[in-house]
Amino acid sequence: MGDVAMTVHPIIALTNEYPNLKITVLTNSFFSPFFETIPNVSVIGLDKKGKHKGILGLRKLSNEIKSLGIDAIADFHGVLRTNTLKQLLRFSNIPFAQIDKGREEKKSLTRVKNKIFKPLKTSHQRYTDTLTQLGFKINLQPTAILPKRPLTPNIRKFSTQDTKKWIGIAPFAQHLGKIYPYEKIEAIIRELNSRDNCHIFLFGGGKKEIEILEETALHFSNVTNIAGQISFSEELALISNLDLMLSMDSGNGHLAAMFGVPVITIWGVTHPFAGFTPFSQPSENSLIPDLNKFPQIPTSIYGNKFPEGYENASISINIEHILSRISHYLKIN
Image 1 (tube, rainbow, N blue to C red):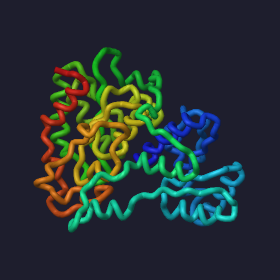
Image 2 (image 1 turned 90 degrees about the vertical axis):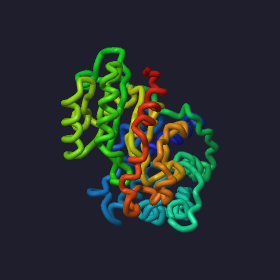
Image 3 (image 1 turned 90 degrees about the horizontal axis):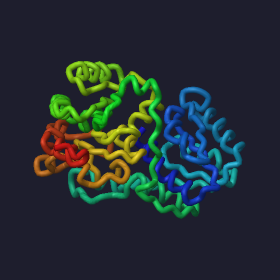
């Protein structure tokens, strides 16, 4: 989800520079709401488990693409499926540009011995470079964000009608090495709840996460669990109205950044240098573990690999540091 969310910014920049260009995004249908407000952008929903499954499904998809009269293709994904599509379209004379994912650079950044610890290109820039291969010159500015979306009556049932600051907290990630200890998240929630000028919205997904978030929300007067309560489109609308998002190195941070919402990111065994920071956020908003204690960070790009003892590296990030950064952004005294 985060990878797809990061494509929004270069696509907005592309529409700004080339307002007469018609753009078709091929992605999972679930992500269609990302693009619904961008002018001249439509979505082909990829049905990986149905009609687009396997080589026969990809052949059918390639025929769908050709039937649209596509003039050029920018592959932002660079995986087996898109490589197969490239081969199926090789006789169609459609220019096909593929992302340079910087795999060797990322290996150098994450290896234990002879680690080359330096910032790499962001994913946003890699997507922009892919479009440049096709001849589109793009100026990727911080203003390449989606507009705030209106709150539906259904969302308003879960939100307060007052002047409190709205803070989103997304405490989970796909891999253990990227998750801040939940008892520390609860301590942050407890402190913010006590200030009484904040309303905290909890984000997550999956049965277990929803149960945890629901239990947490029961104990605080200014906390609402959103997970499992509203549709994804409504969740995006709520996120667009937040004053701040606190997340792990995970998708929710990128969802907030799509709308220009300030994002504070807690990092574990991954690191901002890999290029996956939320769009246009200052470096001070990326809170990383103590690298003197955990010098092998980043241990992997996605947080799925780490040596023994690194699974809780983020615990070295001080709660007071996180609260101080939140207070700085919201001007809460």
